[in-house]
Length: 345
Ligand code: SF4
Image 1 (cartoon, rainbow, N blue to C red):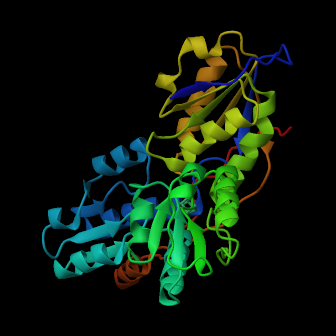
Image 2: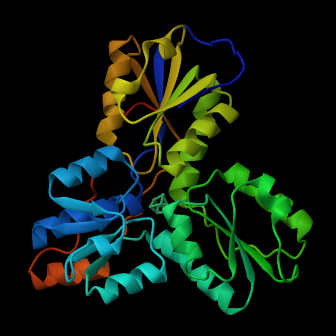
């Protein structure tokens, strides 16, 4: 994926990398990946996982090699088997289907996605029309909308606002997918409010802390960058948004790559400052591979641009903790990856 913004002169002659912080794994991804690892360790194979546990090719391939079996739907799982729900969440219909097959489920839905589900349930109960800002077809949106299909309509972008039809303009609320562009979402809300002045806000931010923090860090470094490389998979919403944010914030070009092998030499031609960041589902090792690749191409100086410090960590899914406890195993866990300290600018 590549997009180019207007020409901007380079401001420094020393080839350098600006490394965004925070980047990479968020608390919800960390919890979901550890949940599958622990399930494999504790119960052995097979452990089935509905959809990609998180939207990252490397993570999915690694877990598959360790014995996880990824399926699209519950009816692909043998009756009574163990199934993990992904970090993106599932609708009540999926839960019911798993129950009907007597599956032993482990719910790795990120608690911040669950929070949005609860909002949908509550506003539906109060008979609101719920405008879910998000991307049609994304698993998280399917799960949230499935909580109250009769009340929810999905609004993909500001351009769709004019097509929204509600029963009572005085009883409308918006909620959102957790991994959107903050700026675009606010534009959608602005336009919705023009049409529906009584539009109610969600009780708290639905775009999660990790999505917001990664966008803020990219906004800070992008104006200094000729190129911003975002490590992340094509189906990772927050990774794709980071490319857009980099361009909107002044980077001359921005590219998303799954791994360093996808970086093209021509992207670096004439560049003196390369920004690097990663989506919330990306292991740090892939970022360090990119940094090494850039060092091999003369970008040996690495400076971290930190805009926030994150220390949130979620406990493992309840069903898994119960299983670990029964097996006499530790239910707490150390932080997954210690971040390498780098000089800050
Ligand atoms: S990106 Fe946000 S909502 Fe999604 S798993 Fe991470 S913390 Fe949870």
